[in-house]
Image 1: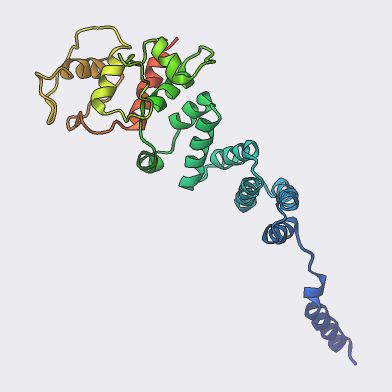
Image 2: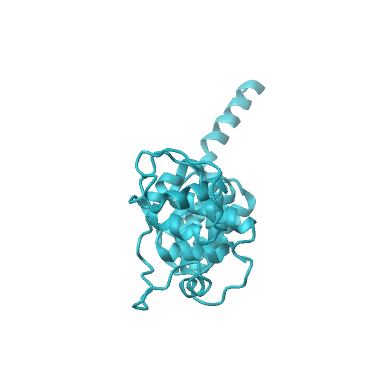
Amino acid sequence: MSCRNRFWTVTLVFFGCAPFFHHENDFERGLESYKNKEYAAAVDYFKSYHTQHPDYDSALYYLFNCYQKLNKPEEQIPILEKLVHGNMTDENVYLNLVYYYRKYERYKDLYILLSHYPRDQQDNLERHLALTRRLFAELICGATTQKVTTDPMIYSISKGYLPRFPDGQLYAEDTLTYANLIVLLDRLVEPDYPRNFFPMKNLSAKSYLYLPYMRLVDSGILTFEPYLVPEFPARISTTVNAVEVLSKRGRLD
């Protein structure tokens, strides 16, 4: 047999046996453990693979699911944070992180997350989450420099950020409309007379909301929206921006 023929024979034999030389990587081992419902073992494999390949998001997704199966929410939050910091575009990642921050009372983290929420995902957030009195209180707690050790509703009411109802009820899950938001925000600014007044489609100049709204616009707390409908639910993004301005001006300390 010539040297050339011997070379091709060895080559074909080698590649024909290639599958026998395949070694599973940690991601594949993790998948196998995951399929077998061996979630603790799968965690170790996926963590190892992610350490070696930090840009491979699939390992993080499986890690998150494993921790869900193992009922370890404290481990799920860092995974979601890694995905968010990696500019993840999956809407569910952000929604899950909002949920866990609220559940575990991490209001400063919640406030920061909502302050930097991707613009292209804000509509999705508004569809899944309403601006309630409780969420407003949580944003206040997240934005203040004070250490909050009580329930956000109790703290916000005691500080005058939310009104106290005569019947003593908190009404924490009541959705805030733009009319509600205007009244709440106006309580937090000086009663200065606005320098400018603008016509609006759905808000009469004779309305009790008109002067406060113009004051908030004039002071840069709210952006002027000529078609604003007072009875519509207030947007979370609008509220976060307003709270951020108030916080920077020291109105929440």
